[in-house]
Amino acid sequence: MTPTTTLIYIRSLTSILNKIMRDFLGTIYSWFQTFWCENLHYFLWGYDPSTLGFTLTNIYNIVGLITIFVSLVIVLVYYYIINHPRLCTWWSWLITLLVNSVIGLFIGFGIVFSKFTNGAIPDALMYEYNEDGIVVNQFISQLDCWGFSFGCFFVSIIFFVVFTFVFKWWSKNAKHVPFL
Image (cartoon, rainbow, N blue to C red; front, top):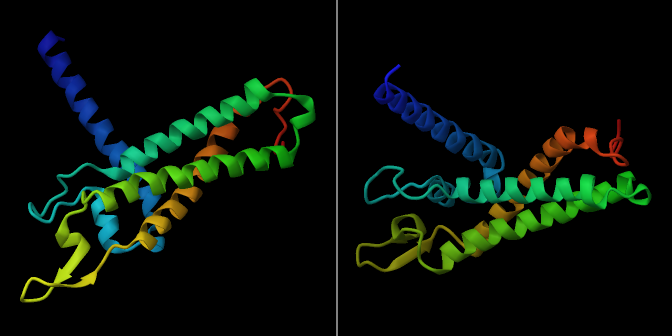
């Protein structure tokens, strides 16, 4: 294999992994899409009405990667740093899960609400105009931002539970928490 073909192979593999990761995180968030409006959903996928394509930043990836990182850190802290026999109970695990989920909720709200208030969402996705150019309807509201954050709450739970089953087995005291 020549260096040129190796480079081409690595670039194509990276492109495939990027597509899988983009679709993977967006699909997980799409499970909870009923909590926010369709226009916000398009924006979070990176849809740009001016180009009629998905050319904007995929917000699902940003929020998803932050959520994965936070969930991973909290699981590792619970199982390997706290790791105290007195805290190896189902209720302490549940409290940790809720703390993780509330952090995920506020991460999702903070990112999407900042896009909402800073005007990053294209007007064609935000508003409906009449013939005179006057706004007659607002499609995306603050309630949709809270809806998205509620979806982030559940996605944080999913990642926390997955990381729990991956990392709990090597913990000295908490390997049987929340259950065998």
